[in-house]
Length: 418
Image (cartoon, rainbow, N blue to C red; front, side):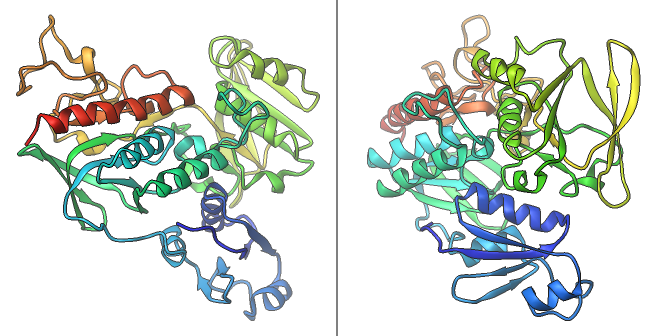
């Protein structure tokens, strides 16, 4: 995955498909020009198609002039040369998820001579890659964007020889003979002597009836890095009261005329870092509405208003809204484990280490004399790190630390397993 020269992305107004491409490029730290077509004249001049209604949009124009008509994110990644085949039949360790925890594990695995592969189903960086500015990570006193930090981690892992399989996703895992055999969504298979699950979490949905109708058409999940420039001078809304929502508010306030945070809790103290909440509460463009949540969405084709329920007043009122960003935590991506011996907690997070012990004994089916290592799941050699792990501290530094620590346990496991 080498750096790519400037590309052009051309599409109509409020296109969900174009938003997915923009978001992918932004998180992958690929520079691009965005061209928005508003009428047939724009379409003829900028894209060379006679009418906007019949044009195969979005259109991606590569640096060499190649045109990709209505590509998927995978099509674009493939054209960029990021979709590759596994180089080996078996690996020492396979790492699933290229967020901070997975990237950290990849750096340590590759630098310590393990035959390692990193599998990522979307953009490198995971959920942290969508953060506009991370200010409390040691070593970056001026802060750093999540995408830039992830790109540095990727480059470091590649320098040590990590193999990255992007736009790949494991859908089924089988553990036998001291190996993990994974069926990938594209039909290919992957085998490793140990594995690390760093698949993180997916943004929690609002669970409103017409939610899918507005995705990419005014409703967005995450910090809206690629969407922020389109919010200039507008009034935008953010759902959530944790650090991710606070970072999104600070970033969007650089463009929007007004930012309103909708927080279900009665205050920010229990969910957001003090330095961030202080900035938000004193920012002249940011309002915080506590004990408030979105009750309904409405609009003709695109989002144009939302209904807000104030729990303190027990009242629901409609307000105009063309941009709504949702940052309300996440659910673990662990469906692949449901038919395996891996233990999950009631919320679906992977249980590891001492939390597996019952009356001081390993779980039923544990085949070894030793107890599970810290970060090890109920299957020997299968580890979980970062947000996907039950009881984990949801902080960037902790995820990075767990990724490196897991590789130490992988070494111990490999040394005692044929």
